[in-house]
Structure formats: structure tokens, C-alpha cells
Length: 85
Image (cartoon, rainbow, N blue to C red):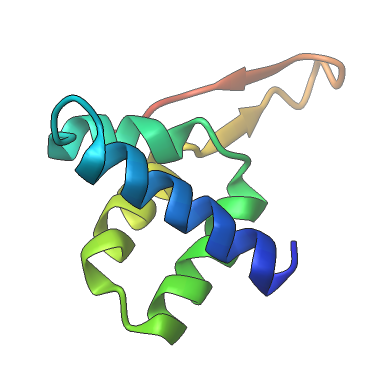
């Protein structure tokens, strides 16, 4: 994803979480980022660190941690999404 696309995603989140009907809670912010693909989350985390937007890094890191995917080795076509707390 390009830096411009990552900036657009971050701007969209800021607008929705700050200027919507009500501000997002920490859990809602994590849930928002959890809907993204792990690769996008990794790129977004690096982008936020580069911009020094550390407030959002915490949400993105937590969402990324919860997106761990485990694949069953004996059934290669089956994978299971596990949320780890």
C-alpha cells in the first residue's frame, strides 16, 4: 500500500473516531483496525511510527496482535482465525 493510501486510511479513522456522533472508545478503535488485513496493519503501524502518531500505534499494534492466524497442518485447505487476548 502506498504512503498516500495509508495516510487516507488514518485520516478516515481520525475523522470517524473524533468528529462522528461520538468519540470511539479504545475497544472500538481496536475493533476498527482489526477489520484490516494483517499486512495493511503492519504497514499502517510503520506509517504511524514514522509520523510519530503514537496514540494510534497502540490501537494498531493491539489489533495486529489479535489477528494471529493458525493453519491446521493436516488439513491444508482449512484455516482458523483465533483472537488471542
